[in-house]
Image: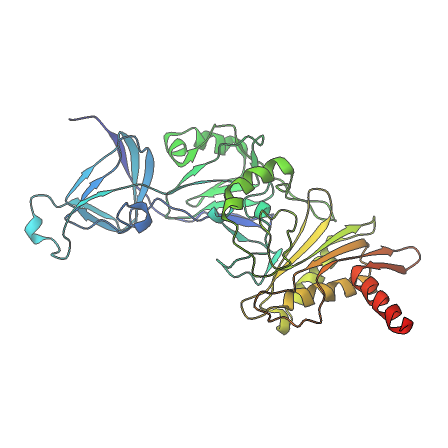
Length: 399
């Protein structure tokens, strides 16, 4: 059966168009629909020159071909695009099979493509000045799931030389970002991006209603920092619908669940309230300074503002640094008792009961809080750990 296709072939000259970032956070899309990505094929391998390549009839995609492509035959979809890189060579070998690579046995191989949802955190790579010592692909990450997907002040990048298909359908009232870069083309205002997303190529790359993504400059002028906002309940429910079913079993018996995280993790967190004298930058400098100490280089850390105007620090241990995150959280708590920074209270949570039994038993798990009263410089401490010690002290003398 013959049918008409409108599968376009584009030759793309790849040049990066630089842009200045007012925001320090970049979220980069990871998945791609490139022809040479084995994960895009039902056989989990790239096509070879005796294969019959099949694109499903209704698969309306953009496929990037970075280099040479030689197959026996190709069945195209009704609609779609090939994007050829600078050095790409595209040829069909039917009629000259004898001259092809003898290691290729030849079979039907079907393109299935990788499409992901905007709100699924593993689809993004995070580059942020708020993150320290991050090891890609490690779990758990100190970065909350809510901030692994783009925030309103983030710059979103779809890399040069990568084709993609992303679903951005949402019930959260729309998506706002600071800028979007697609294959080197910078969109930093809503008019230019709206024009693109309504184009045939834009419709193939984004499975979206045209009005769902808004691109607008959104600098932060608040000296106490600006919240991402994705930890609001309505947005977090959407994000966690992807992550919660995949939560691994924590490797400790006393996990914590920081704000914005969909899963319980083994780590430490500090949640701070502050007064009118608070400045975010000095606290961030303290955060950076601690995490660059030699003893903490394996501890991963993240600092940000929550949607309800608290400052949260999260720390997780490296593979060979069990207990360091708890120790670091304790150091920070002590620092805030000595120098107030405008902080009025701190709640600290720590995981110390590791399943492996590596961590010294002298450290106590649980939650401790203290309040700082800046006017009188008096520190009032309400600590579960201290209460336990006091009870043990009284018992000793009663006997």
